[in-house]
Length: 253
Ligand SMILES: N[C@@H](CCC(=O)N[C@@H](CS)C(=O)NCC(=O)O)C(=O)O
Image 1: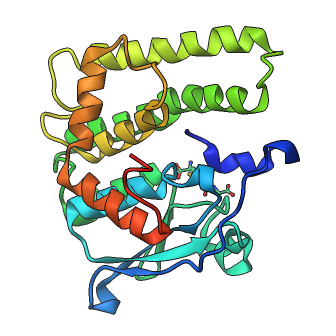
Image 2 (image 1 turned 180 degrees about the vertical axis):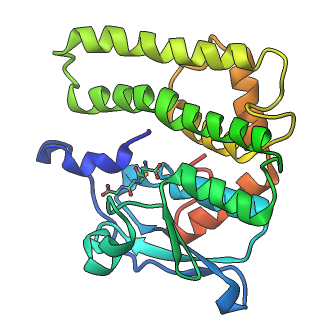
């Protein structure tokens, strides 16, 4: 579910049980000074677990191999609204990274920064880099808003009063998915010949509809999504995330 985290705004009848664990910190390297800090979730209401965009940032970190630690925030306990966190996160959300005082928010910006810094998962030439930026934007500004909208109307209009939205939004979603399918006609990865952070973004966005049948009519897109998630760095990311939230990996696949 793309916006499961927003379900805490639902009427009380939909309210989800909150967890009460203390968020742990995953320290992934001993040299504290060289560590990038990733702000992610350590505690969030159940429907949000496994659905959050700190997964994309951690996936990029696992891919590029830069040393990092995770500062795990307690969403349920209101930590994202603390003054300290407001200062680094413009919209009081995750993911945010802090690289020795340089703070970056927005998952697409975070993965691009990590790729640039590591010199991995992005070409060196300006045209290649721009191609990766283009497809990161395509993921978050073309495909994702419609998929989020689908999620929102499913969540906030369960009795389908807004029937036009229920009919039209899936059509728009299928339009974008069809265009991604076309892009994948003769290529394995979305932006370049090799896997890049644009694939992290596109697969991260597509993951939001993994429990629906929306990908079914698009075999290349489905195979692409599975190819992305077959990466060992994604497996490590899922395992670390599950450990951090005290949940099972199979429950969030
Ligand atoms: N456009 C942002 C969206 C980030 C976002 O939606 N974060 C959610 C988790 S997936 C969040 O922190 N929600 C907590 C809240 O809004 O209270 C990005 O791509 O990083």
